[in-house]
Length: 455
Image 1 (tube, helix red, strand yellow):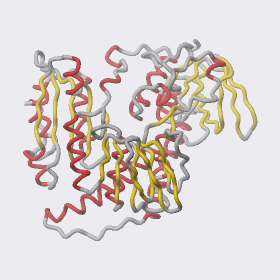
Image 2 (spheres, rainbow, N blue to C red):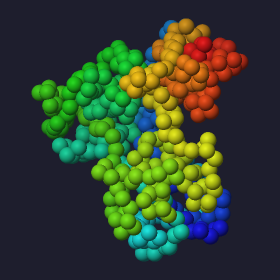
Image 3 (cartoon, rainbow, N blue to C red):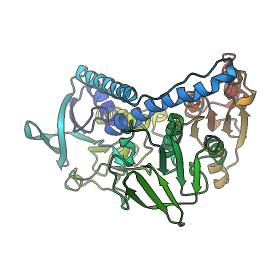
């Protein structure tokens, strides 16, 4: 490949724009093709709006706790129009910032729809007509969209997907949330905080079925304390709208009637009509594109990253993949410690209390028969948590009993998404629990619980 390869990127989300700017700085001639939002639809239409609204929900929840801090709660009410303007303003600012960065790196941007015309070719349909572009390397980073089951038709008014909720036209009186994974529980927290009555349909026996049972138990109790109805062991099989009501029928015979229903049952990759077969790219049964550790598909010069790769659907992971692709396209040899290890990716759930984890989980270790050491400290013993009047949750650290190396951890509590970064660094750098214990941390601070758990 030449020192200045032609690199075409399909999709301007976290994987696409990160690969574009990184490769451009390394000398590639980069063309980025995006049909919707530069910055990514899943990122700017899902992640950022939801977290913006959750920030408002957190503020409302905190207002309800300030009586224990010597203050009288304020009469805080939600103004949907102001909230909508705030969401749109942040989205526009972020998209503009990303565009400015791409422009500064001399990345050519095309607003249009792209299809692969072969292993080295891309056909683009835009307002300017049809353009055929030849590439030395191609990245498919077209993202994902909300999954919609076959038994209902979202209408954007009463039967909603996640992208209809930022915010919805009206605050639901009684929202039924279908799906108790990460997205589902975040929306339960969001809408209960905003004042809606919420019913959560849980297909298994705990919310967050893939998470630590102790973590799930804390969140379930918080939901019950807020008046959330949990329908456990129930799977939605039909959703019907009757004027101002929606009816959700479950496979165990139970029926729930509400004002709105929200589908939070995952996402599907945007891999249709991309010309993947024409280019010879293999796709699995779920529509995802299998990749190797360099994010290459079975066609070496064509890469896939972000949600379409079937790896962890996190913006941080997509960005890391984008940088990895740029390095590989430019012939840079990544160091061993920079190998992509998806098992060491930190993730967070922005409920209240927040939930975050990284690395090896306790339940996963026990199921595999691996010997581990688990230490746990509640925030109720932390001075800063008491000062903030929020002692909910705990810090749990998983380590190797023989070496003391930190293998993973979970945090439930205030600012868990920020605190998990310390454990994530320890897991990535193979630090030992003694390294956390010996760190001279701020006092009083929530981070002291990390050292206490390590000790």
